Image 1 (tube, chains in turn orange, purple):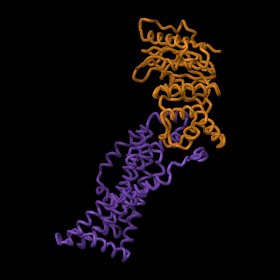
Image 2 (cartoon, chains in turn purple, brown; image 1 turned 120 degrees about the vertical axis):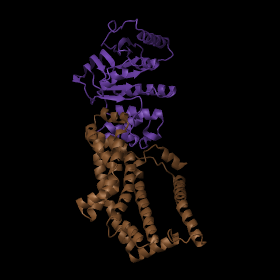
Image 3 (cartoon, helix red, strand yellow; image 1 turned 180 degrees about the vertical axis):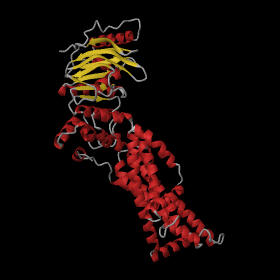
Image 4 (cartoon, chains in turn yellow, brown; image 1 turned 180 degrees about the horizontal axis):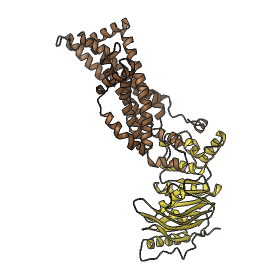
Length: 261
Length: 282
């Protein structure tokens, strides 16, 4: 169980990027964090990843306080960030220290075949397309079998077709071991397709505005009326989150309780 | 190469026709590189042959090669070349080790950088010749002072190259290492060192080039053997062909050692997605 309790972050330059963010995220839940620029989405994700330390509040995973990168937490960045001097296979194996050679090879082979890149094991990252590189990044993050996987706008740099393909693929991979996914995105469609719960944030300072549970079953039909209704609701919440006259709704929502089924 | 890379077979990326194309490209590049010196030499040879110049102060290639042949035949060329190469090798090794260590420390730790860098930058501005009297006093007139001078010459480009390369490593790549909880030494070994390798190799080549320059300074001022000594000997005895022959020897050996570094490091940089590779293929 991932718990965020009154998490806040003020940067050394005085910018208050995140304020009193609380949530409880159950194992296997997929949470999409959405909001305008400067609403603290990435700050929140980096604090959960342990890459930045929260200035206030606590983040705990199964009772462990997160102040630094944790072995049970993986992250996929906006860019693939593959190490150019390692082959694709070695990039995927990057986080597998401590395993036997056979185990590493087996996991890497399996991960690459799950992302459809078994034939690319020996090539350099420079030989991959953007979509392929992001698939390798996904494989690299999943292969240590994290309990929580953080995704920081992982598909935003890709074309619409590749993005949709990778969204579907991510759900397939998630179904293998059902880690908790926390996805930061600007894409409402992506949030509704993937998430069990959509967290809408608002800026200055970054804080929770509204939580929207997603009751659609999977696989989700992007053309269905229910899907469109939900998209509209998220878009309305996003619009309102930027309107200073509208108060935060976090107290009205089921804060900390995932709609789990 | 790690276990996984070795286990998972790398698909062949070069077939026979592309190997032939590579060879043809290398040959073309070699011929283009030789065109300028060979052309100039031939033109000067012709000019002297036609009597447009007496070739006394700037001897034509035939006289220079005859002098080189004579030096080689008597064994002098080998003796002097060997002495110079050994000095450069020792100075280069010392300079590289020191430059790499100090550069890595200054690059990795901002405190060390603030302490070390201003002083080292000031020392870098000192002309090589200025060190000679001091090194002779400190290390004597034999090999130690010459090797120390060459090491100083090699140290600075390597130090600057390593420090600058570490400082310019992509923060996002370093963050990948942090996200995977790499320890400090592991971060250096698995992220920083590979990331700085291309710049490091350039700094090694610059350092070696300066090593060859500094060996001349060292040998001009008190050596009984070495290519620098040959230069001085040629000047004192009025033998311009010997001077030019020594210069040619410097150029050939300097270029060869630089080429050796380049060739030795090519396999380490196969992963690079650089303009230079594309330009080489064009």
